[in-house]
Image (cartoon, helix red, strand yellow):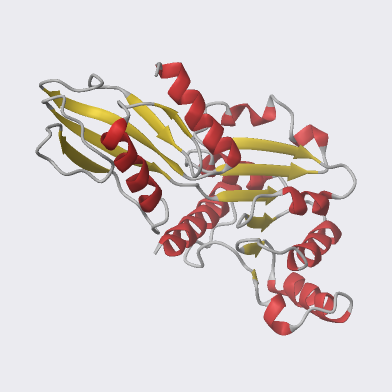
Length: 272
């Protein structure tokens, strides 16, 4: 499989947010079906490429699919002796050589949605964009989502998804992948309140964070209970204030660092 082919296969898995694995022939001694460097991409139900077929490939596929079911899978090596004296799970391969295969899990990364790409939102996006995740940027204002303003994210590691929603930004919630972590920090408190209400009504979200003061949250909490009909347990899903309490600076970049650090800690805890 050429470089472009396996890269496209991995990109396909990522676009689907489907876990999988990359299998590479790491070393060959003697005769073997494929040379070192041959690659196989394994999805939950499909595969792309080949490392030689037969027992080697079947065992590698089985093992990748076992690994991606674990909480925090790590790469591992597998050794295969290709002789007729070795009993294999999926038949005999008697090329006469030996093969070492590297299995690299490709788990589904976190997804984060930032509602409001103002001063803090953009600084936060700059930090999160350096991580392997899906990053959704949502705002009602077209001028904060211009290509020029978001140019700082051009070399992002993250997959960036920009949503301009001039009327109802809360409608984006239903389009987000399951488990997406939500951060609400728009320029409009009424918009923030509507998003909090909609987030509590949306199933399969990850954490929900709201930027703002204690006074703002007191008003929101009462409104969510009386007008929204949410009980206390549901309302407690919303974390506010967000970030690290130890960081007291008010500069957008300082706030963003605290919010990002707290979110990264949430990612680590979810992998345990």
